[in-house]
Length: 358
Image 1 (tube, rainbow, N blue to C red):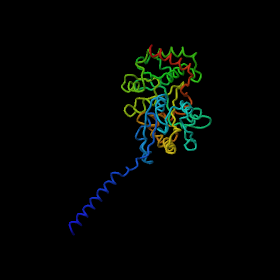
Image 2: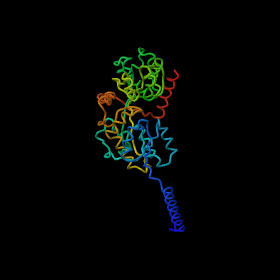
Image 3: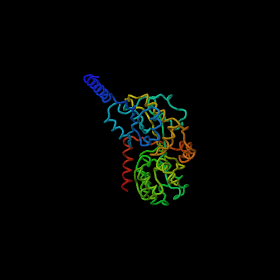
Image 4: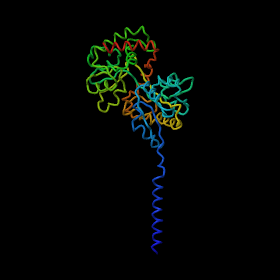
């Protein structure tokens, strides 16, 4: 082989190498996994809940936590249409969100409707004009949480325990005016559905007594920490969401609905009207409402609460912590959050402000 032939072959080889590596460098990257963007409460961010869906559908779920519907709406105002796919929202705020045009209609037949607790289906909250826009997924209670080694559990069955001098200095009050005012009303024998301005003086009197007996008023984390560390023995406005997740560390932390009743919160899940991935979003809703999804959501590392699906995959011990067997009585004896008009809301806030300053 001549030098010329050798040089020609070397040049050809070099050209091949250059072309080959250029092709590698310039080739488009492998397609990234499809993404689903969810605006949610913290309980949906548990990897144990998300991984099964992500693996099955080869999708990445991006979670954005928020802590109040007003905060979520402000975030949505700053977003572009189509940025978000799924919305986890307080059931009492579903109609408000629908009226803003934010949620897409849902077909009830796509979900295990007959397995959802009848009392939790609440079409009056989750539908508009006979059309469902969100599916109930989880619920719980603002009631009384306590350390059953430090108090008499029988006392906790009476809503009036919140102003019982026996527990002076041992009570923490959850700083949220609507459920606590409702709880006081229940303790006074007033049904929250009948609550009006004329009841506020009597409620204020009991609130002041509660403040005099309480060790602190704080947010969920503050009152939960106070109970867990032994600073207090009772949380007014607490419930399964405040103590169930801590049960393994301290089995004495418990909760109950008083005999007079309590306040029930519910959360729902829907699909954003502007989502470009509605089919995938609906599949995510179906997973969340499946027995497996419901079991994982109910026992999320952020907070536990009752699943909407009566067939949720829970162990007997988990059901015991959630007081599963008492749910028929609790559901029948609980009230939704008030949805006061502007004037009544202001009046309640004024009373609450006086309570905080007392």
